[in-house]
Length: 277
Image (cartoon, rainbow, N blue to C red; front, side):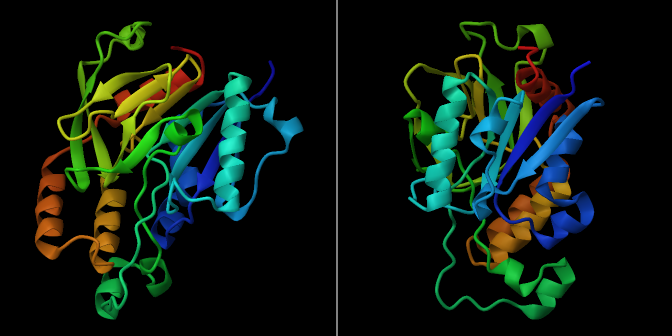
């Protein structure tokens, strides 16, 4: 049997917490999506590590992670990633994009509480890294992204799966009509790429999921996140003054009362990435 190969395109630095507990975000994704008999590689594209053109054909699928960088920026690695996505589109390679790529800017003069940093297990250098993530897959395919008019979406959100998908996208998995997912973003896809189709929405975000042909799918939320990862991100956002204490307290309280449908999301992502949809 030929070994199937997949690649994680890592678009941000790992936090010390995630590295220590999960082996980085690469480890988080492989734990969710990997199966026996597969080979998973990682390319740290934000550091300029990309697969060579002659390697691309050997992969069955690619996963794009979240990023600290602005999806609208013209940094060299972002331009290279967009070129890569266009090649993958032409080759009809499976691509799963997760809440990708808008930068949160740290305001001038923020003072980090060193005792709180130690308590939360966050290094000072880590606290200075930008955090916000959104979708660059839409940009590569010709869509538009921008700040969400309704502001931050942090915590659990109910995603309504489309029942009018032209391909009955979810019917084979027998998923419920609504799935809970972890969100952490303040940007959104505003306009779909041509020929793309909305396959999921929420009361907060009109385009929670979209698919492009049968080979590319974007998810605004984080099916890979665990509750502890989300709580860690809330602490970092608060330390950066990107959210206020009262909002952080409210979100933490709600997080403790909810649970994401992680197994259903895993099944959906695996089925898409590996040809079951």
